[in-house]
Length: 328
Length: 295
Image (cartoon, rainbow over all chains, first blue to last red; front, side):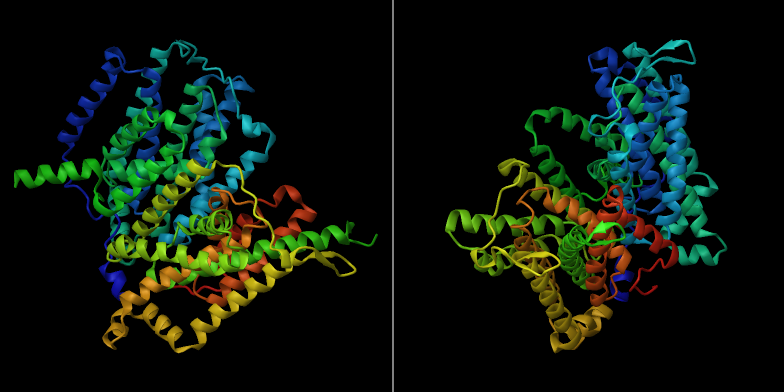
């Protein structure tokens, strides 16, 4: 097996050349501006909000996979749990939206701490299987516990007024709040990746024994990355529950965990903008194919296969590699 | 009526039997996963879909060709195993030099494709498959009623597991296989065609899943989703047992089936989650799995 292992490259060794901070800020500015005008040029705001929630979810997931090298196949548990908690807080406890989102996010962070502590005890393929199994456990819990209302989910969650001022029942106001949440989290992720913490994380991904021999407590870094990723995935789930006024079993199901993997893979693992592009592409495809029933599953599977066989860098990864080769 | 711990013995033995049946499927599926993982270093996410294909194959054989259960037990594993060989040759073979996680992602995509196609054509409600004539009815053991088909499933799966164990651990072919698991390049240098062995191993593992599918067809309904829910539990079983040993996979499979059955008697609310809870406990105490080796 030694021969195979030495030949195997880390899953995201196809990293795009590091973008400088200025390029990143310019690109982010362009993205923010485009998203800000998007609802005014005829793009349906509800679609945009859905895509943004998933983009945030995929970015959170990519923080763990793309920069930590840890493939979680159970990220739906954070999206779903946060959704249920924030929906419950807003509807049953009558919490204002900011507190409801905060509660959902905190719940996912706590869950991330527990799940992460368990999952990082094994590596690679086992890590993926453990996260999948833990997520399935949470799924059954959500199916059975009374406060989630089983198959019905928590419906008619009030959007409320943000900080008592902004009326979120206005779709455009809601949209800009979602956009603000997304951009804040996106900048945070960029900051994390380029911090000393992020660099240690990448070192562990590339060669864990070496990082340990340099004195880094690899487990601690991995756990922190896991919790951070779970927290941001929770933020996405909590926001999504408020936007759609619904928390349901779909968000904790394993297919959702697979979907976020797909978004990241299609957009480009280990790239900053990849998950955003991937999320918009997949959500767009799904709403376009909504009438085709199970064919969506088949097409989703086909995209997986094509990406793995021929397109491992993803859209953004391929584009930046093409750009880099053109410049040199 | 006699009772044990306040539970009627009838119910207790009934659930124990269901547990053993589920355990038989866990054992066969995790065995296939372990064999494939040993040589290919890939976790075969398609395993659940291939188990479902086995069940559908036996349904098609009966429905369209009038071929009964016993022939299906032989034909379905060969047919589904052949599709596995095609998958290995055309797709998986390109991934061996990459991170193992790509194999997981590819097989996950394949599972979605297969499951989606079957759901498209056959809906998500189950199709019935009759128990073969010879195994209708049951035996009264005095303390419980044992349906013949269920007894057959347990005996047949133990036989299959034991044969697989024997072939891998005690025959020459098996020793090549184990040697290739340890050091592929060296075995190849001795003139053994390792790539072909890998292909056949994958085909065999897939065939094993299909075999389990045929056996499951009369018990559970033939349903496109039947593999998806199974595979996640089987993953947990594999984490608990550790993939290092064939015997470990078999013992863990049966053992967890029984534990699940008993949970249904004593605390039904937890019967869905008990295997995952056990996984958590095992991870805390012995992270490598009950039969696994730390590497």
